[in-house]
Length: 187
Image (cartoon, rainbow, N blue to C red; front, side, top):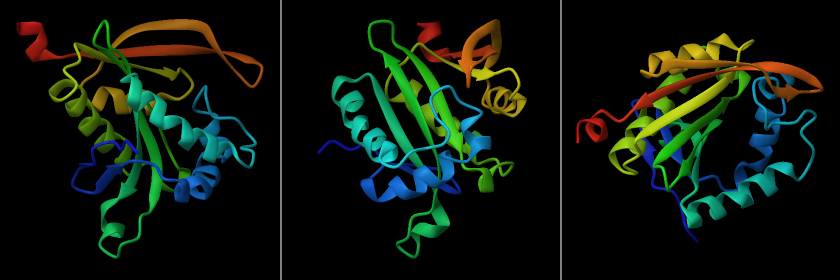
């Protein structure tokens, strides 16, 4: 079975998801406030959806079209337990060498800087290991906290797309941020 390379930060370990994470994914991603921040997470979060989602990760890894990481607290790994706090992924256009960043953090872990910390290490991985030319991300305009994460990791505002997505039957505005690989750009 293919696994993603483990990445670490001062406070986090980013690792492959396992089926043992499914109940935590359902609990955390299933909160209405978390689901409201993404296009992909439904609410209510039905039984079996987490297992199916986790099972889908190997396809992206095999094809090189994406990598999904479980964001876990490093301190919990000392006791051989793993406290899942969210997910972060990078979808990859291999032909263009462009990545798209996506993430969610469970509500109990909001406003702790964990998302910024995880996104920083994913950006480094995308540029240094995957050799991507640029990485972009979208967020709902009504979720400015996600925009602040993107700014903190060095992404620049690129565009706003009015009514570009739909969440729960309502059209929402998307905001796009992007950052370019400085090494690739200088070559």
